[in-house]
Length: 169
Image (tube, rainbow, N blue to C red):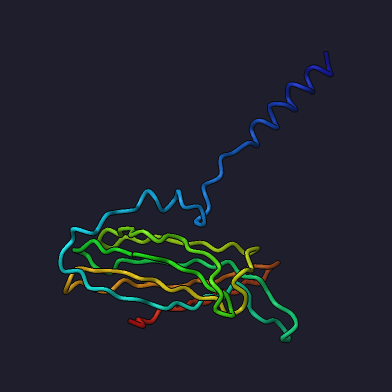
C-alpha cells in the first residue's frame, strides 16, 4: 500500500511539473499572428533602421566574455496610426546573417510594442551583433522606435544598459 501511495504522488508530482512554455520569439508562429497584407495601403513612407545589440560583452580582458539577455523593443510611437515593420534581420559581430525573425509585414497598433528576446545562452551574435529593420509608416506619422535592453544578473550583481536604433535609409 505504501508503494502504491508513493507511486501515485510521484506521478502527480511529475504531471504537475509539465507546464506549457510560451513560444520563443525565434519561432515564426509568434509573428504569424501579426502579419498583414499592406499591398493595397496608399501613401506609406519607407524606412530602414540599424540597432546594435550585445549578446556578450568583454569582462576583465578581451579573452573573457560575459553573456547577456537582450530584449529588442519594436515600438509604435504614434498615438493615431498603425505602422508596419517589414523585416527584422539579425547579424553577428562579423556582419554574417544569423536569422530572420520575420520577413512579411507585421503591424503595430498605435502605441503598441512588440519584443524580440535573445536568450542569455544564445551567443550566436557575439559582442557586436545588430539588427536591420525595414518599416513603413503612413505619411506624416512618426517613425517607429527600436531599442535594445541588455541585462544579466549573477549572484548579487546586475548589469543593464540600452541602445537605440538609427535610421539609415
